Image 1 (cartoon, rainbow, N blue to C red):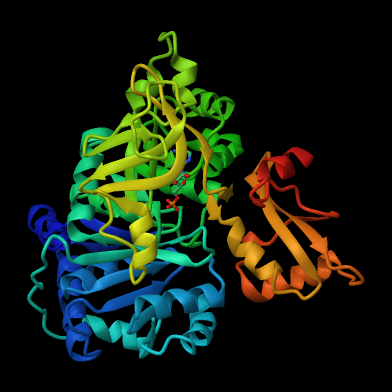
Image 2 (cartoon, helix red, strand yellow):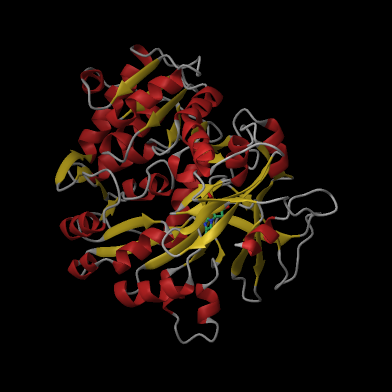
Length: 506
Ligand code: AMP
């Protein structure tokens, strides 16, 4: 089934109810959204000459057009390539080239960057700014018939950074997205028709993935006019569009809880915060429960099994009298309904409760593979199991605690940063002999990036030199906040750099 069927169903069931809103104002009803998407689908085929299976990318700061574009893509039987608006031109270029996207939608703030990136993406034929006439023109004409799709057809290429430093496109199929949607109703919540969802986190990731369970229930999806996360604006929107569900990274929850504007939230405005993507400190979580009430549900997932591995439900958060309540708050909860989750040793043997191993997952939400990357696919998907690269342990009650991120990933402000990617850039400098990047705990951002650098004998190097190199090659938020020059990197007998020792130095 084509995932765009969800919108067809909602257009029939919810007709004139609001589907999309920009700030205070309704943008489209469900019926009008279906009509618009069906006409846009005609343009994708006829004007842009796209054929089923072709990839269409977008680099959009959060806006209503992001949802329109996605459904038009699926309606036409194409595959969406949502890109995080904060990426660097080189990262956009890699994703555009790797996915072979033929068309890319942009917001004006990203138009120049994407035009530059397009030079390295030979398949990309056209860039359409969603604020210009060529986009408006896509709503004019006759509707298309919805394309047939097989459940295993690619629908969404979810680009995550990899340990190799190159982003990898987790290929999510129509089936993956449908099962993820149904799992929301099983484990997270069944939102009430007429409620809202405010998109404050990037639409290319968790917030965008949650559009499906909202849309299928006749919820209005609201986009802040600022296009970003601003606490007073978010609170105002929740009051304007009550019974609100929202997806936030843990640091965003913290910012909400600590902001004076949280006191302006009216009763019934906030229905549910689903949070995840990074660890949340127990003290922050307790404070959030105190201030907001019992409205929190945690998710543990990854692009390769989107939003679905384990969950800590609202009910589990509320069981204060349970003897292991605190330990449970520190955990990522229990396995999701739609997947099987195990903790295993290197040979894939199941480990008993309490023992730390790698978390592996099997089920209908698990990606079909990495786009155009058979080696990475073979490493991650073995005998039908997804090897997450995350370490963890189950307790006797089946609650999973994440122990360390075995990929050494750094999570800063809810964004994932892979050290290898930064190391690759630093190594470009001729004066760098060796380097290693680790995360240092930061009270506001969760973690911040620190680079350890060994300078070649006789050479000179300053933090400013390295900063410039990073600014020229990777997104700003990935740049190290501190450079430590050292004599040599600590290594084990196999020559592997000991990041744990580097962290200890901090
Ligand atoms: P991404 O593919 O960008 O969604 O990143 C997924 C990674 O974020 C996972 O493999 C985990 O390492 C981390 N992560 C996701 N959810 C949680 C959570 N609830 N608690 C701790 N880490 C998480």
